[in-house]
Image (cartoon, one colour):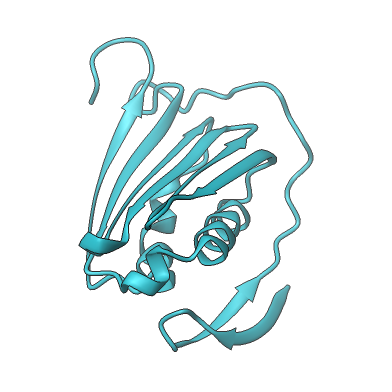
Length: 150
């Protein structure tokens, strides 16, 4: 179901998507030898506006939208605004976690999304680029589980 339309922090028209999460499950399904127990994506967002990265509400709202985009199960969230600038936050999901640290003075945000089971966290990279108005984004997807990092 599509939610209300509005302007993103970048001044671009955005549409919020409301997704009903699937029924809770506490078992972890392995996706085979190339999947491990889950996937962990490290996302580097650069050249973001200071006002976006320094706004606690924007960062918290954006990361909570990631929960909806991934269709994962929110357990807890905590965000903190630093003085003179910066925001850090962590969302604990049933499938693992999502974290963010911003350096508004550098126009830089570091975001980690770790999901166990069959959820693919790479689907949020473009969403985060748009929502945080990044001019440049890079990411690395890691397979997590016993053995060497792949």
